[in-house]
Length: 136
Image (cartoon, rainbow, N blue to C red; front, side):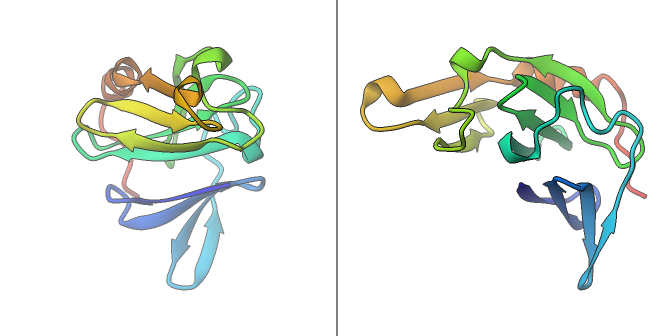
């Protein structure tokens, strides 16, 4: 499961086993956008991020290797990556999004052999080419 604040929507978005949900006040509202769930979706292996510069929200599935653009009306596959270059699919990895470099930085285990960097600028660019995201 993953939670983010999406400034385009002005709400917290939860990505979990029941699909994406928006938090309004104290109530979660389930969404059913076209294109969701992505093929091979695994709620226990996903992380979402928001790129403030582009206004894009992406969901990375570390089990299927897919990057999906999240939109409340229509989601779309915008990139793929190899499981060998991403965090451990069993959830042991710690990760963060480095916005300036547009890359995922991950640490799995200890030492330099457990460090990964994955550029996602091309997925952000592909998402931006789809046009503005829906805000309502």
